[in-house]
Length: 250
Image (cartoon, helix red, strand yellow):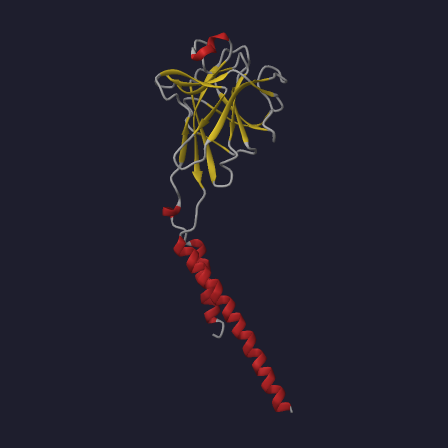
């Protein structure tokens, strides 16, 4: 029974740790890569995307070298180029694509501004700002129909080449969950370069990591302080008993 207060203190600490309410889980944050105006919107070679509750993410347009046999693979080198295009052309035609060539000059877009397999086009997204506070990454694709797929790859540490393949997304498949392994994501048309496939990156959704409620943290702190004081008192009592015994021996 002497240990009962200590047991209760520890139990209170356990309750505090488990007392994180669902209310402390913030709402998911969605980055929408659709154009902000109707039609096609030239964005330049680099563009910053924002979302309420999340950090800004920077996307860069470019292409990858073909080191494999017809489809993108890990190790394909990325070269920045062309420009990003915000697509806002109706159902299943929403998201960011890439435009190369003369058809992209002076903001005039007439070059199929999606992520094309034939041009080995790619969008690189810097997600380094998300790792410390966010998890549960999901990707949504548009214009990925009839066998077309949006390929999602991690990047190497420097963001200069495709890394491991994380998933494929299609229009019909809805959101696809991924687990990033680096600070960069690459998005490509994951089809052979002769297929004519072209796809769009529509959105990225992330969920903030859970944060304990202030009340739970306070309760845990109180419990830990109580445990510490209880142990000190017990040690002090033991020393007192020893000293009295020593005096009786004298």
